[in-house]
Image (tube, rainbow, N blue to C red; front, top):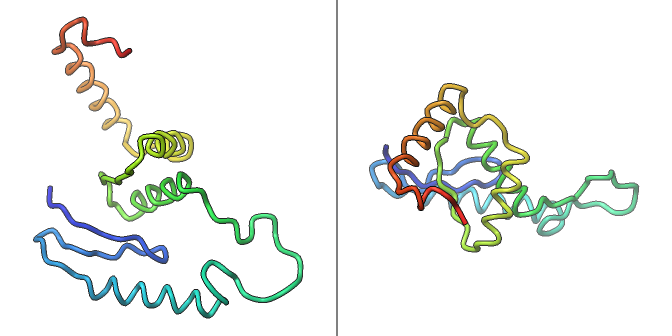
Amino acid sequence: MPLEHSAYINENFIQLIDERGKEKWQKYGEEVHRHKARDAERGGKGKKGGKGGKKGKNENKIPSMADSYAILVEQFAKCNRLPSIIFSFSRNGCDEKAEKLSERVKNLVTPEESKQIRNFAQVSLLKLEESERELP
């Protein structure tokens, strides 16, 4: 399977390196510039602009990092970009993100794929020594 690298900015996937290894940094730079300009128009990073008035219950709510990963995986699914690898450099953070994903993102595989995964896991477990089959 070819490997490509992308960034997710402004609800868009920006390809950084294509499947042949060719770098495509110019589009990334343009998107970052557009993102910064949009923030500046709104009165600064993360602000919606304007003063006073009532705010809705969820307005300006920034999702947690774990929720952000769930949103990202949902976008991967919508754009047919699965399977994908997402890195987390913290064991606790990885566990938290995995928990959120399991709560929020359902059916990333078809029933047939689920059956194949289950069969593969069962066959793989049978190849282990009996003492290695139980997790601590």
